[in-house]
Image (cartoon, rainbow, N blue to C red; front, side, top):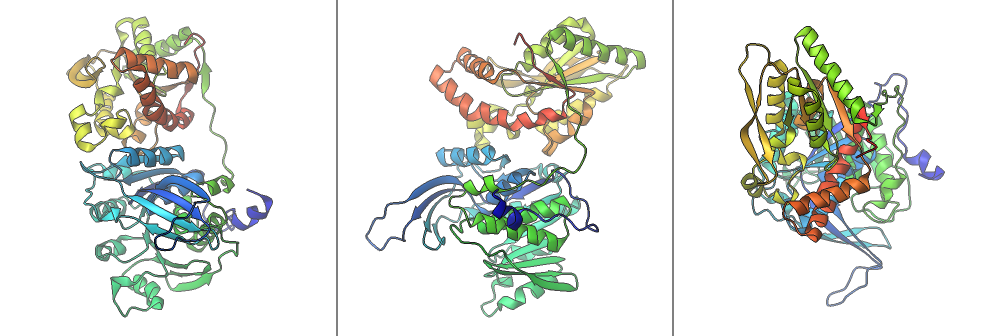
Length: 538
């Protein structure tokens, strides 16, 4: 951020009496995603004419999706529950979201087609015109693990789209005492049930409670308070933000800036508001943060370029201890043997987790370590919990097999818990195994005897810190993260796909589109490991 923007946009340090901010909050964003094709034009076209765009951008759009991107850009951990489906538009939207640090949980039903929005931005005024199907009207059900997704979050943001999904998420957040922020752009009938479940409602100036023809703009804030919403904000573009909290109310100014592009300005406001709420800011302070971020957004052309100007808040806390680095297999075997010795000395089984990006050699290393320990260790892989190909096709996720939501993560956590608690006299636990020759999981393939002192589990997502995966780390006595040379790893992945029947061009395309997206997702989780493994003979 330039010095001129730093004062105007960077979040204000909290007052001494304010609650301490969380360093990296987690947020769940539930709602609409589109694919936006954005053209910047000198003037909107007249009927039966064509205009040449000065600039073109293609990016994921939608209120919840854009808010999640902003939350992640501010340093938060953002998970987006949305409907993407399959096809070129869905792949482009997913790639953009994941490239900007957003974890995507796709709940699209079979046959779902992602809405594509055509956007024209008038460069004279920065105002935008949007033509799009109403993607939020599609019937999208809530996944059974919504409660798992909510657990551990500091905020849930809803955008009012996909009604059934919104309602289930709001109930789950209420049950888990996680604050709910609602982006209320326009009234929809299902908001009558949703609004009272929200802790914060941020409404646009065009919003009318109940869609009553005679409703007045000034009645929105008091009306929302009257139905039990504790905190309400109403935005008016560049005009002051109105707010209500308990018995207090007021307005706060919006920074005056030169407007270049208004597309997604409201979404930027809501993403920053969610970040500040999750970080522990007071309500008015959170609104000030949100107004600064939204004001920055409108000063830069394009849906994503402005994110580079955001300043992440400084980390006020002590740095986490750096993981130990290991460079030899002998060193790793010695560490695993020490775990076996501990298990034998106190009678409590130990569990070692080996994580890392696709193709980093996790299963190979796990087998080598287990072999070196003789019969003291058994390997149980995360990949045994892959969803079957038939189920992936039903869910529309077959084209990205290997992503976090293509596993039965909750089932994996349950089995790991059983293995942790398994002791002398208990029955054998039989785990599933993934067979690459058929590209399917096979049930009942790996027997784990209660006498095994060490269980070695390996997989991409053992150290992720959201959804059911977040419960894995606490079940591990020690965690390793493999970090080989990326160029060698990618070539090894391509060769593996070729060995299993893919043509080289298709294998490379799959690696670049799917495997590398998953690699980007897991790379930050290395900080949760005890050991980062950089083998010199990978």
